[in-house]
Amino acid sequence: MSNNSISRYSPGAAATTVRWKIFIIMLLLGAINYIDRTSLAIAMPYIVEEFDIQDAVVVGLLHSTFFWAYALMQIPSGVLADRFKTRTIIAWATIIWGAFQAVAALCYSTFTLAIARVGLGVSEAPIMPSGAKLMGAWLTPTERGRGSMLLDGGAALGTALGAVILTWLIAFFGSWRMAFVVAGIGTIMAGLLAWWYIRTYPHEHPYINKAELDHITEHNPTSVESGKKFKTIRYQTLLKTAQRSGINWRLGLL
Image 1: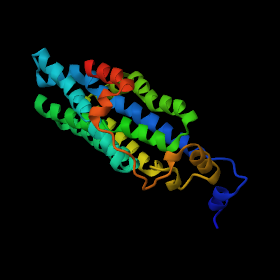
Image 2: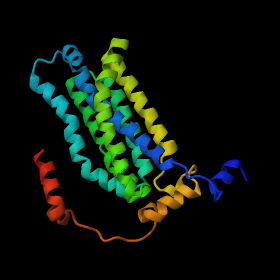
Image 3: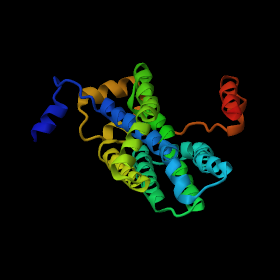
């Protein structure tokens, strides 16, 4: 038996912190998510000049195409997170949106750039629903506040750092296109990191020890994959539920 196996199953071993490392990775992915989505705003003055865009409406449409796609994919993304392995969804979504971020550098017109932004919006959408599913599997009820902080904190971190990072990349390379390529490659690498370290359920992880696994499973029945069937709730019922209606209608108005 290897030293790693001995420490993993030793009754006296201190609990590992695999779950928190996973959510630090989710913090990173959330930050990259916002860095990539805001990249167009940073590069827009250069794009307007290069593409000779005269109409402000076109600029507005370029900005909004991402959000149309992102918004429309929210419910489908939740369905994907429920039906497939969370690890797979997170890793592939990150790799694909990194590819769209890099491919945007090849665009030669406002139309092709809009298509790239739609692809970015579609592929970024699954991250937050999948992160919420991951939180249900890995964190106990008393830990989910901290998990939400890490999951949602990426948005603020990415917004704060995005302008600085993209501006520096554009200045360093003298090209918004190269800045997009570098950002896309960095995102793809983050997706590979997610595939390497994240697991859908705690018992699947090679680096978790018995102490941490017991802590999670004893306080969180959803951390164990099972064939148990749960009652399906129709979307119409969910929309009419009193506890949810205020949130749903507020999001609709936004």
